[in-house]
Image (tube, rainbow, N blue to C red; front, side):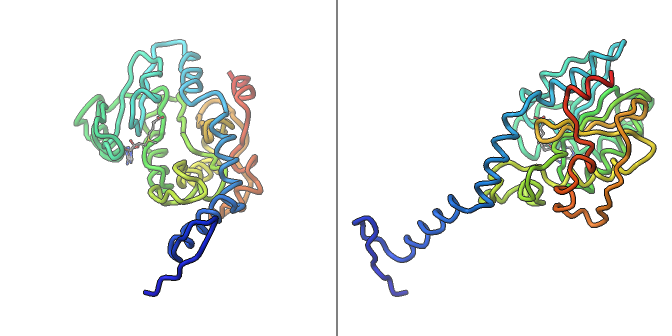
Length: 258
Ligand SMILES: C[S@@+](CC[C@H](N)C(=O)[O-])C[C@H]1O[C@@H](n2cnc3c(N)ncnc32)[C@H](O)[C@@H]1O
C-alpha cells in the first residue's frame, strides 16, 4: 500500500495515522457521543442507590425477611449492603472470577432446582427478589415470572436497569465499548419491565435513580398499568412516553406508598 506522508502540527504522520486521529476527533465531537456522555454522568450522579431502595422496602416488613438476589457479580456493590435476616444469592459467574454466591448457576437452573426440591424448601417465599442477572428481555421476563411464583403475597420484585437514558445504553451487545454509552449498559431489560407495566394483575413503577429501579407488587397500588402502545418495543416510543411507559416516579413519591 502506498503511504502518503502528511504534515499535521509539524509532525510527519502517515495516512493511516491521520485517519485514526480523524476518527478520534469525530468520536469526541460527535453529537450522539456527547449527549450520551452527558446522560451517563447525570445518571451516575443520581441518588439513592438500589441498595438504599431495597433496604427501605425490607425495613417496612414487620417480620424477619428473606431476600434473593439474581445476578450478583461483586458482593460489595450491593449484596453485602442488604439488611435482611436471610439472604440468598444466585450467579453463574459470567462476570467475576471470585463469584462468591450461594448458588453458582443461572436463574433458570435455580428456579428449576427450587421447583424440583433439589435445594431449599419448595414452599419458600421471598419478601424481596432483586433481578439483576441477564439484561436481555426474554430472560428478564422469565426471571419476573419465576420470581412471582416464589414471592410472598405482600413481597416485592425490584429490578435494576429499567430506564436506559439513550438507545445506546439499551443495546443488546454488552461487549461493544466504542459506543456512545461507553462501558455503561442497561441492555433490553426495559422491554421486560414495559411488558410487566401492561399487566393488570400486578402493580409497578420505576424509581428515577440508579438507571431505573423497577418495583413490582401484587398488593400495594404503585400506579396504573401503562396504556402506551409499543408493540415492537421501539426505543423512540419509550423515549417519547418515558414517564407513562415506566411509571417513572421519584423516591419521595415511592416512599409515600408505605
Ligand atoms: C450487573 S451484574 C450484577 C450486579 C449486582 N446485582 C449489583 O447490584 O451490583 C450481572 C450479573 O448477572 C449474572 N448473570 C448473567 N446471566 C445470568 C443468569 N441467567 N442468571 C443469573 N445471573 C446471571 C452475571 O454473571 C453478572 O455477575
